[in-house]
Amino acid sequence: MTPLPVSFVGIGAIGLPMAARIAAAGHQVTGVDPAPGTADRARDAGLAGVVASVDRAPDALVTVVMVATPEQLTTLVDTALDARPDQAGRHWVIMSTVGPEAVRTEGERLAQAGAHVVDAPVTGGVARARTGELTIFAAGESTDLATVTPVLSACGTVRPVGGRLGDGQAIKVVNQHLCSVHIVAAAEALNLADALGLDPAKVLGLVETGAAGSFMLSDRGPRMLEGTDTEVTSTVSIFVKDSGLVAEAARAAGADTPLLDDARRRYLAAVERGLASRDDSRVIETYRKTP
View 1 (cartoon, helix red, strand yellow):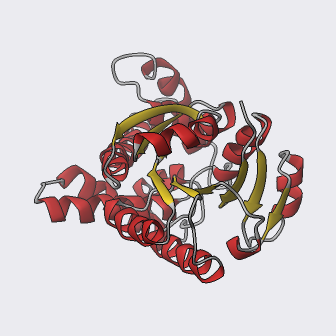
View 2 (spheres, rainbow, N blue to C red):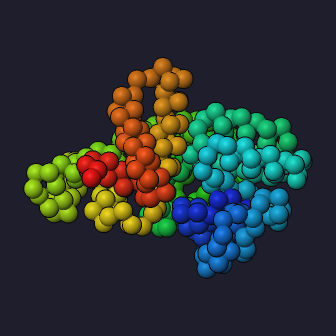
View 3 (cartoon, rainbow, N blue to C red):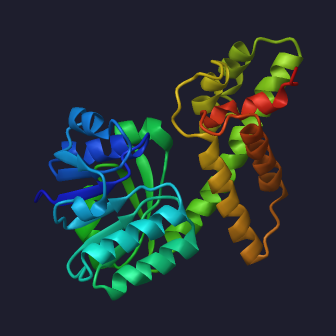
């Protein structure tokens, strides 16, 4: 394998372990993130360095994007194109969950500047990011996929889904529909166990290995039982955003999503309780009566 120079934009809870896996695979990775404290975390994770903005990053063949929102993606592309209007020969890999429309719009802007763009959102959460076992829904030209696969493979299993930008994001929309609903279902079930006078921890251990089990039940369930201050791996606000992307895509397609709509109301209720920056498992607190 030939080591590739990589800029990794967004080295937060899931981005940092992804960037670390890419660096451990032998690639030269520079983190891009304005958040305080990222330099120390990046160094400890094996990154070559960290800069606050993409226009300050060393020239890289591959730019991996793990920003949080469509608006942040637009700002990132604005900054990159202002700094380097000619993107010829550069490969952009958009791994964020930002929706099909955002990737198509920003991907077209980058392509017009000469860049090669791959739409490659991930699923598996922080736990699988740390072990390099993410699933990656990769859409783009086959030659572009071939160029960036050595980088992507460090993070998990690449599942090519076709050549059309936005199709990876569309699959992630379906994925996030299920994730949004499954987290709320797990919270509701564990609250039910408590209401029935059972020990939720014991119930979780019993049911998670049966037909009712799910990744979200096993991953979020223990943190639901730990309390408000549990480790944050994905915030409530992220699922407000993601469930909103799902709802928006569903409306555009004329699809009926009542379960998603109910789950979204729970995330919004969690925000109203001041839990926006807490772990998404804290949606369980919306089932508890306020004093």
